[in-house]
Length: 378
Image (tube, rainbow, N blue to C red; front, side, top):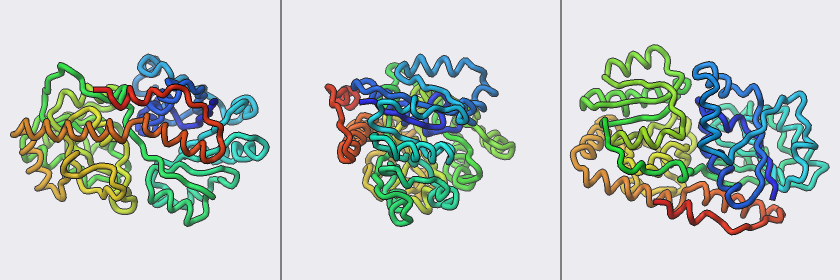
């Protein structure tokens, strides 16, 4: 079938985690024989920052890594929806899209036969409900929410008639162990600073433990203010700036352990949503220690797939144990990867998407699936 996807950017993942999952979904759909037309604004904020910092080379490289991902860049003022949506059976509009675009596509749906879904992968439904209420979803057939709590918010506030849980997942074509790579340091963390939403947590669960244990550590990410870079430097942690997300497997392979420190809204108000980073880390088979978050939807087995540190002291104990006991670290890493392959790949999410589409009345063509190849990849 023909699918149209509107998102902020697939070409750039500069401070833009939504690109990670959507690249994998587009690739999986295309590999199964579906036609996917992806659209992103020509002036996307993430892409503009990427080019300003690193030039055009990353845009060429991402097309080489994801040959199935070929987004059409548009200007909202001149976008012809009749042309863009011709022949589509399913249209997905991501939450980072402009409210004007969301409304225009909704109006177009009123005179078309495709099914229309809104995709929400952010915490604004809790932290900024006024902004979310600006989106006109009256003619949308449903919402894809990346957690049960967000799905329930859409239904309780009557922002949408129907809503479905559609978690993010790992693109295991890209996120997999790098065979033959040898660790060069103790710890790596990949994540952006993020509007002071986890400043205290990063000090307690990353900077403090690395400093106190004397670990060799490296951090990748953007939007680090001067005080954050100074804190990393004082702790002996190397900050390397932006890392293309598809190069994360190599960074994981060069370290012995990693941590996940979720932003405060996900811990305080959105239980059950781990965001994309733990999926990708476990897919790469690196031992993972998380600061507290509630796995309210039973996605994983805490303590078996990853370790949970309730405070900075426990983080230090977990890190020290994993670094001192390679067999324990290897067992944790292997168990986490097995869970990803069994339940949380982009192939699984495409299965779910096609099931939702069929429930909404879409005649879903079912070419011979390639999901088994993703799930079995070692």
